[in-house]
Length: 185
Image 1 (cartoon, one colour):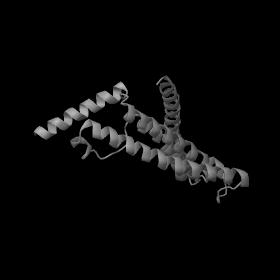
Image 2 (cartoon, helix red, strand yellow):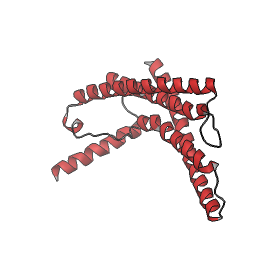
Image 3 (cartoon, one colour):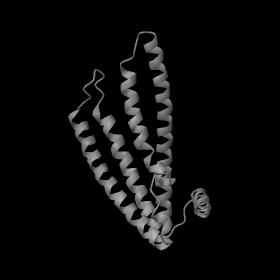
Image 4 (cartoon, one colour):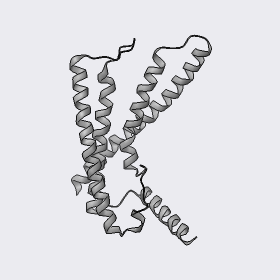
């Protein structure tokens, strides 16, 4: 289990870094949009600001996905889960984590193919900036690869019963308490 913990720590460290980059990208996007508003008000709109803010936004969204899963913050419907025994929930969590990992592996493989194709052909966007497409394609591969690895970690946690991080456990116990209170109301 030491190997699992070392790999988990490494992957989660990368996820934290990706989340930080995603957060910084959102900050930069805010600055870019503000600059574009000022430029447009002055009658001199920028050509590159809207395009690059769109790229940064897509990178920020996919870049933070693995971190969001790691922190157990993805949106999910728990109506059925809250009425099932813990052992059934573990099996359900294991199966959904494997399905998520499989899907993410497929998207990552496709992203890698698109990245390689764009890199080898030198293909660029059809805009006046002519941004190399590999710059746009690589974050898709990287993000879905990280998400697949995080789903595999989640599957191992469900299979072997590893406890969640203390903060997630505290959040879960609060949610369980709120659920119990709402059931009594």
